Image 1 (cartoon, rainbow, N blue to C red):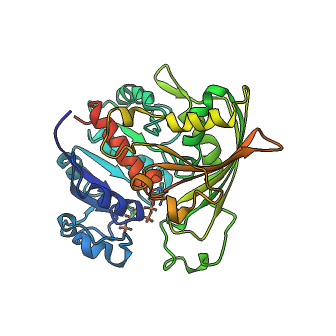
Image 2: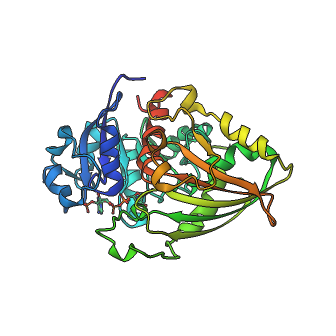
Length: 360
Ligand SMILES: NC(=O)c1ccc[n+]([C@@H]2O[C@H](COP(=O)([O-])OP(=O)(O)OC[C@H]3O[C@@H](n4cnc5c(N)ncnc54)[C@H](OP(=O)(O)O)[C@@H]3O)[C@@H](O)[C@H]2O)c1
């Protein structure tokens, strides 16, 4: 593994892009050298391009404030040549994102994406680093298809599934048969704040376009197997979801119901959560939470305001595990949607890729 990497952020002025800037400000391996967005922002120093759209709590880090923003499409060749890899989080049409990400990969610039466009491309790994790091194997097959030496695309999953799949994963050994999850999703998940989306104050909107389909299908890819250079989706469990937008700034909560082939006891479930570790913990990656899953015994936890920032927003908190009358058990879990669910998950994936030599 190289000692340091020059990094570009495509979509740097957006909600997720800002999180990347915040997270990478003092990163031990990754140094931001390029910021890119649309033609609207290109040519301006980052501070002016982002302007009043900057919504992070701290100030814009000094080392990026004066970087002149580039045009992600027009300047693609220049950007690809000058960085070791890019993070990509843009608000564009799906086919445009697919083409943009493939273009960077073909320019030999690895792309770590927060967008949904390539999540179901069979040789593009969709990684939650603690859960399916073995899917990185398909990258070699993807490179063959693209005709590249080092360029490839790796994606992270949707922020909604990040709130309940981590809690279900250590229970797979008991044979999960069916899952029902209702998600209560923060407004930052739509790139918004209460200032930019005042209709969300004292309100709930029972629809998030495309979210239920993503929430039901993406876990099956994450739990799939690599076969013949592709990821073949898992067939089980059956998953049904409803996704609601709620007046919370950050943090997606899920109310989850689950049944098993071999029903574990409550104690066994809590033990499985407490002891669960993945490769990020074993490799001591810089953004890996020491404890990925936290269980709260208090009846009124997890709460988004109190618990979303556990371990820098990279841990998942769980509570209210109890028997159910229709399913075996029910519980509630919470994950920070723009940290673990977006930029933080992307940074952890990049750390895993770097450690395994994919970014050299
Ligand atoms: N927010 C979350 O919690 C979350 C979680 C997981 C995944 N995601 C995904 O991450 C992506 C970004 O989300 P967001 O919430 O950060 O959106 P956002 O706040 O609306 O930001 C969108 C970014 O895309 C850029 N952009 C728009 N059109 C472009 C173009 N033609 N070429 C290059 N850049 C362009 C914008 O640049 P300008 O400022 O120049 O317009 C801006 O930097 C989306 O695909 C979203 O689904 C978001």
